[in-house]
View 1 (cartoon, rainbow, N blue to C red):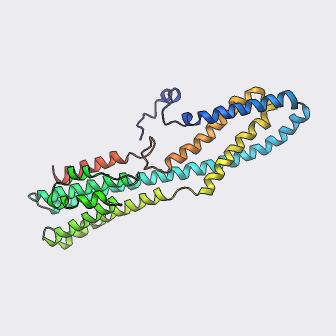
View 2 (view 1 turned 60 degrees about the vertical axis):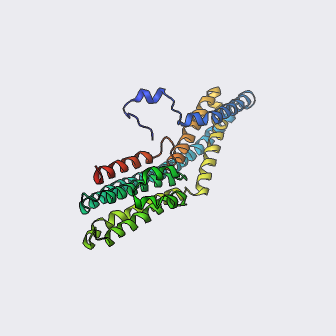
View 3 (view 1 turned 180 degrees about the horizontal axis):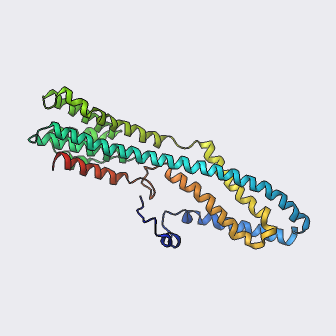
Length: 301
């Protein structure tokens, strides 16, 4: 995720960031500029007269209505995409809070001399966050991570199954639940104490399911395709209708209209899936590192 100061206006205006849509749209803008120039040349040298000017005024009214309709569709598109981004941020906020709460409850329950149990719980909590952020990027945490982190007797037995699992967060969650159950069986926790951290532990898998729902449910295909076609034909019609009034100034105006409309669609496409690791996506790796730091601080330090 890009860190920035929203008050630096001039920096935003005159600096082109690598992730900006301008870079992605350069080939398309060049093509639209050439198209607008050809249309302007043909109309201005062959078709310009008073009757054509009056005709384009009437069509322009219809074109304005299309622009209003397109603006409503784009507002809905960006709001829907941002809702998905914000929901993902709230889910990871819940995971952070639940991890802290669960670690704090276990810190109060376990005795200070239970160092191995505390380390095991800390590693499982942090590993769930690490594997979840990788899982949402369609990646897997490799065997080296587990060998370096899983040092206790209980965790060493989990290394092969966790490294080779097709759903690593679920495997870590199952290991965490089983370990908490084993602590109860050994008499290190009591029945009444389980209710203090059960809700926080359940939120782990709730967050995982919520993030997977965002990841696996894209914007409906027909809506996305229709909006792209609408933008394309809207831009293509602009020089045909307004060229007789704007002459060759139609070229930069058409390119600017394309840049604005297409950029809104590209931004929506990027933020509607907030877990891919793109510059504007959620910093899930940094949040996982923060969860690890908090778990170590509460249970071990």
